[in-house]
Amino acid sequence: MDFYGHGDSTTIGWSSQMDDIKAATFYLHHSMLLVSIQIEHFCWCLNFIRASCKVNLRNRSLSPCLSLDS
Image 1 (cartoon, one colour):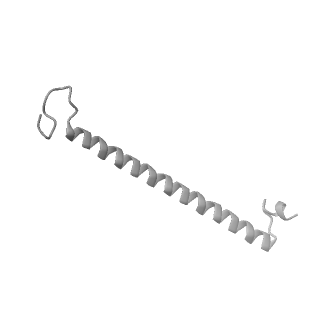
Image 2: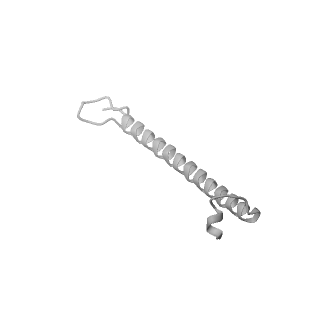
Image 3: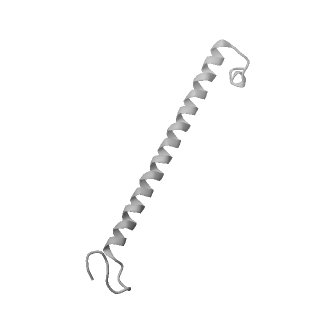
């Protein structure tokens, strides 16, 4: 059997194993990147909502956040 896995069919080729590892690594990295972007977006939205609630409370404008104040 040579380096690229050409040999008898019972042996898993080294090359295909490396391709699987590369694909799994890429997928893991990609999915973790997506999750971190989603978390960042969620935190940004949360901070934006909290900031706008504080502004609304200060201005005493009509908003759902006023119910927290009373």
